[in-house]
Image (cartoon, rainbow, N blue to C red):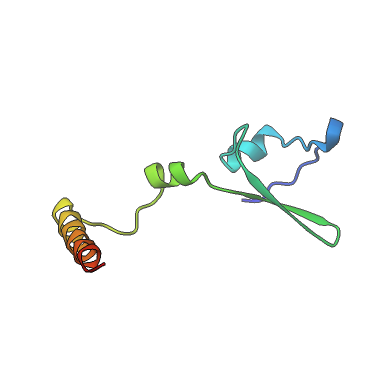
Length: 86
């Protein structure tokens, strides 16, 4: 998608983004963004919220509850052995 719009710089250097831009990037008040300045160009990059990514983002790995339990038990035994030798 390509959008080209004009905006103004407000008091204290605030940049006001048009609603279409906010909506297209799924941004809302309080979201973090990264500003990159190179030569005479400003690039705005949204920084995703880690919690929202964890809850609603695409999942690329799957593990069953039984697999998680087995890994947990293995790790616990490993750390028990380490602490008993110390």
